[in-house]
Image 1 (cartoon, helix red, strand yellow):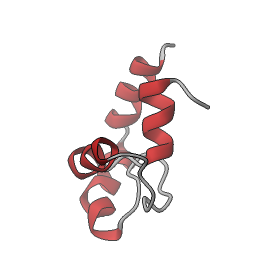
Image 2 (cartoon, rainbow, N blue to C red):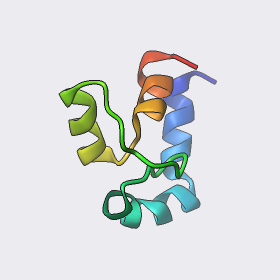
Image 3 (cartoon, one colour):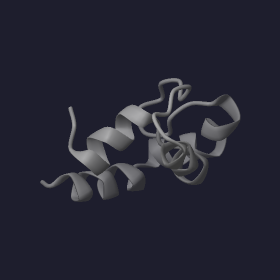
Length: 66
C-alpha cells in the first residue's frame, strides 16, 4: 500500500479519531501519540496546527522518510 493510502487508513482509524480531540491541547501527534514539540519549518508547524500530525509522521507520510 502506498503511503497516501496508509495515511488515509490511519486517519480513519477509530483510535486516531478519538485522539484528534485532545492532540493539539496536549501537544501530541494524533497518529503516533508521541509529543509534537519539534518542527523543522514553519510549514511543518502550520501542518501540525491543521492536522495534529508530528514532524516524524509528516516526514514518513509526506516525504517518504523512515
